[in-house]
Image (cartoon, rainbow, N blue to C red; front, top):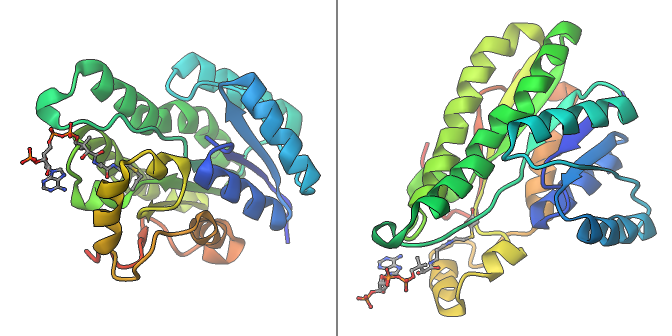
Length: 246
Ligand code: CAA
């Protein structure tokens, strides 16, 4: 197996931590950005104790200049980035008639514009080397909509438009670009949803439970493998049957 350099944005988060671990298990060198130094250091220490060495670089993916600097730092430390997982995401849930511009723009900036900020400085190198794997982490709610998430659903749906355009433009350069759309995964982000609302949501999931971050990470390692080179422009739903659109 070829060892490659991978960047997972938001790697210290709920799904991100599983993504980082699975990519390291595949033999890759893995970096993640962070915003809060203390939190990141504590996380890095826990990962080290589990045997996972992760390169942590400061970077705010919602900011263009910060993202460029972050990519340069990762490449200086680990070499050219061959695998990119645009995973960083936030929620600012509110019904639309109560949503303010800040709730809207923070989510669009972090969940959608970050795809531009981080991918743009990486894509030229991938094209020059004629190899790349890019995965965007979207959401079931970008596919079906969600009460209280006009901002999040808009950004997450937009992500897949980005994926399929990039997939078209870069297929002949050996670069695959795919979306993974997780359903409700048991992470801190989902646990922030009020319990009674969460119970109603779980009741809508045919599998009868929330997902595990590892179940998402397995799909990402599959899509980023050498052998997956004919899979591009796909949107892989991992949601326990919550939404079965096609
Ligand atoms: N369908 C229909 N009606 C709904 C509803 C739904 N899904 N959810 C709420 N309502 C109704 C309530 O029953 C209530 O009705 P009444 O006024 O008649 O009692 C009304 O809407 C409440 O509306 P408000 O505008 O007053 O809402 P609120 O301020 O109480 O809070 C909310 C609304 C913030 C959206 C809250 O319901 C909530 O947190 N919902 C969960 C949103 C969610 O799923 N977020 C996912 C976060 S995790 C994630 O995003 C990861 C991922 O990718 C899956």
